[in-house]
Length: 116
Length: 117
Image (cartoon, rainbow over the protein chains, first blue to last red):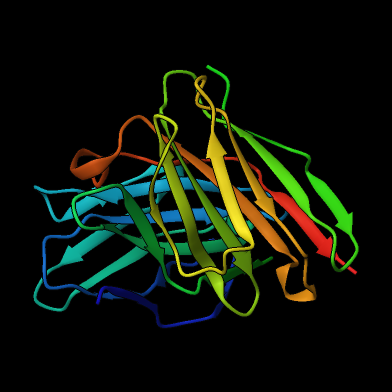
C-alpha cells in the first residue's frame, strides 16, 4: 500500500533561515508527488509537483523539492523563509485505484512556524 | 477563472441531524473529490465524482454520501451526525479522472468547517 510519512510534525525556524521539510513515501509503482500548503482557515494550495523528468522541482514562493527515488524521499526546501511562510505543509502522492478515478494520499502535515 | 467554491464556510449541527455541503468546481473541470480533515486523522479521501458517477470511495461509513450534477457541481451529505464528524471538509476539482488524473493538479476550495455539538 502506498503511504506518505512526514518526519517532522512541527518545525520552528527563524526568519531568513533555511528550512527543509522532510517527506518519505512508499510505493511499488511510479509515483506523482505533490507538496501543498495550508494557511489558517484556508484550503490547500499547490506549491509544486513532481511528475517526471528533472528530480529538482521548483515551485511557488521560492520553494523547491528534490525527488530521490533510491531514498523514496521528496523533501521540500527554501533557502530563506519569511514570516508569511508560517503555515501547514502537506506532502502527497497520487494513487490510481483499479484504473478508475484517483485520490491523493497525504502525509500528516508539518507545521512550519517562522519566528522573527 | 473562478476557483473552487464551497458553501457554507461554517456549520454547526446537533448530533443526529443531517447536513449537506456544496462544492462548485472550476469551470470546465468534471472531477470533484471530497476530503475530510481532522487533527487526529489528517486528510482522508471520502469519494470522487466524475460525469455524475461516483468513481471511487474511501473508507467511510454509509452515512457519508454524495452526488454530482450535470453542471459538475457536487454535494456531500452526512446523515445521523456524530461528534466525530466534526471536521474541515475540503472539495477538490480536477480536469479529468482516471489514469490521466494522476499527474494533473487538484484545486482545492477553502473548505466547510462542520462542528457537531
